[in-house]
Length: 177
Image (cartoon, rainbow, N blue to C red):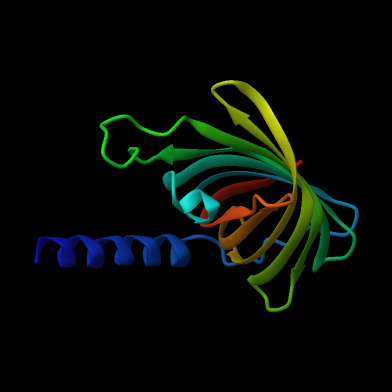
């Protein structure tokens, strides 16, 4: 019962945030710049489900408005994969992270709803140092208000024989530059 009460309280607090914030789409005026700083949490997919249980990260996104509803986007940050224990031991798998560097677009198709598509490169970071560079594909669907941006995305990393990714939610604060 406590968890239901907490869930209801969280939903009500989120609704209050939405309705007390000026409801204006986070469009980028043509010729305008905007920056977003966000936090990501997600679930690993592909080969990483063996060794990782959760992904946590942060991103910085820079947008330039081509029109009032369409922007080009540059994004980077860092994602850390929290390790599972190696089966039969109390020792975790090696620590692992990735630095995404990607570019793409953000298109509002409804007043507050957008699709974001980005491609780029992911640079693996392990305890041993910098690892492989992987092709990165990252689609997202989100809702944006004047300052707050909430999205769900899938980051897919590809190299021959070693593909993985994660499904994540992102909460970001955005502002005009």
